[in-house]
Length: 408
Ligand SMILES: *[C@@H]1O[C@H](CO)[C@@H](O)[C@H](O)[C@H]1NC(C)=O
Ligand SMILES: *[C@@H]1O[C@H](CO)[C@@H](O)[C@H](O)[C@H]1NC(C)=O
Ligand SMILES: *[C@@H]1O[C@H](CO)[C@@H](O)[C@H](O)[C@H]1NC(C)=O
Ligand SMILES: *[C@@H]1O[C@H](CO)[C@@H](O)[C@H](O)[C@H]1NC(C)=O
Ligand SMILES: *[C@@H]1O[C@H](CO)[C@@H](O)[C@H](O)[C@H]1NC(C)=O
Ligand SMILES: *[C@@H]1O[C@H](CO)[C@@H](O)[C@H](O)[C@H]1NC(C)=O
Image 1 (cartoon, protein in one colour):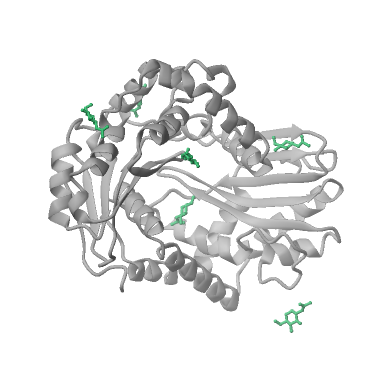
Image 2 (cartoon, protein in one colour):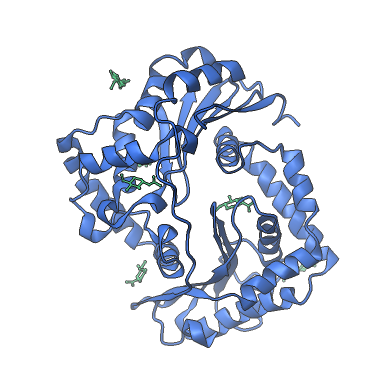
């Protein structure tokens, strides 16, 4: 209850959503969340959100973060007290959201950081698999990379950045969220600073799932592989069932043999190989789609056995889940959710994404009730949606023993 002492949500005529929560914490925090992630890029401005992320970090001393994911981007501000809201910190925050100045030479200076980010990402097999998976799974929008693609490095300019902000950072696609901030004060701030561009901009394109496969064959003796079907979109009833299913199967990483684990995936895969491995459920959800499946890491010779055993465990859940496993998974999910709200950043994120997707904020008690109301049948149905759905797969490593998507 201490998370939700006094909360308010208002939608201004421009469409801007204002959400505040007075949790009586000594430090106030505000954040602006915008539905303008990399999914809104087009072929001629691809990479622009990567550049915006870097530029924001260079120009906003007051704003603590500018994180861009496929669905939403967040500009977070950390404030010492409410009274400084109108002061420079707020101004920096608003500037980066609405009227940033990108000087051409500053933008071209970002090229080396773009290259560095790309090089770092290329070293991470997880990042490679997750990016590849989205590219293979979707025809459009969510197939875009979080990173500026090779052919655009050095070609995204200040005009691209201005145009993108002009067309995508509109009031109706923003939420202004405050913790420990008076709701009326926050409303005034929203009215004064964020009512600049009203309307939705161009209607966003709906994500189109297609199913596909990407394989990065290289010398690595550790094979990373993800196999998914289309999951659930945020705000649907199904999304909770998938989250409970994820916890029945096991949320990684485990990085040990763990044959004693409560994770169904670890239990099942441990029977199929004597080598070290990791297996966890993969679950992401966006405003209009989601991906659900299994993520495995294994020795290259064991990859086929590990992947098939992991999928076998989802099939087993599709034909029924025990009351004990269901209860354990729900308890874990609720504890995890509450833990994510312990930090003010986590709480701000939860409020921001709910304000944007639902125009409301649900207290932890309401979320807990939603989790509790998921039945064994709901979980089995979600598992069955994975089993019978059209698959997407991404793998990297020495893939001689890794099956193709049509072989699983
Ligand atoms: C912002 O810059 C700092 C160093 O100046 C860096 O540690 C941090 O990762 C950067 N954040 C983003 C989102 O690029
Ligand atoms: C914000 O933008 C305005 C207008 O572009 C500018 O005058 C002001 O100095 C900027 N503030 C900060 C803190 O950068
Ligand atoms: C293999 O490919 C993955 C994904 O692109 C990459 O992260 C990994 O570093 C590569 N391994 C080797 C040995 O090249
Ligand atoms: C986002 O901005 C780009 C570049 O200006 C534009 O082409 C695109 O239509 C915008 N997207 C939406 C959904 O408004
Ligand atoms: C597995 O868990 C059970 C019960 O929690 C415990 O008694 C047993 O010692 C554990 N076995 C291993 C190998 O850790
Ligand atoms: C949707 O996915 C995000 C991470 O991608 C996760 O934090 C969130 O809890 C998920 N929402 C639900 C309702 O499962």
